[in-house]
Image 1 (tube, helix red, strand yellow):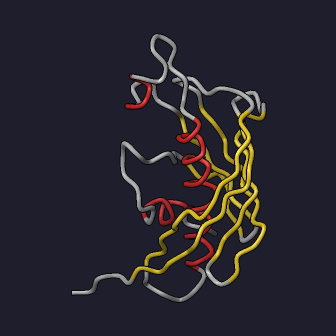
Image 2: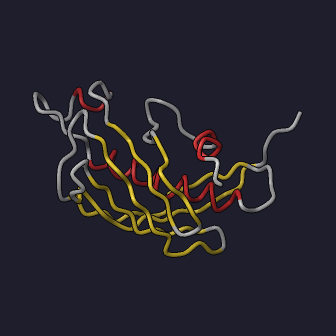
Amino acid sequence: MTNYKNILEKLPYTKPFLFVDQLLSISENGVEGTYRFKEDEYFYEGHFKNRPVTPGVILTECMAQIGLVCLGIFLSSEKDTEDKPQIALVSSQVDFLLPVYPGDTVKIISEKEYFRFGKLKCKVKMLNASDELICRGIISGMVVLEASSKK
């Protein structure tokens, strides 16, 4: 059984730039997770005036954190090491279909295309609470092991 909390603790992000609330499932083939965009998120203040909408770059980041980084941590954790996996985003190609508003909860579904030589590439999609497709794309990155500091 996978310890989702352990994966979440290894994420290299903190609030206000953490866009993962919950992991629903994870395996060597993919991951599913959720995030709720709170009404008081810092980026809504100026995007857009009097009609806040979640910026596409934030939606991409949310998909990358759940669909690439969480999966990369899981896949790297299968190796017997105490090093902390870090992910450097290499590329993303995302198509946006629907807006995300303050208070919306999204579900990210990621399918691994390949994980070789430290490079992870995934097909990722984001759905709203009605299971409508918000955005989809391909995201890839490099998994780099950062040595744990031992004192």
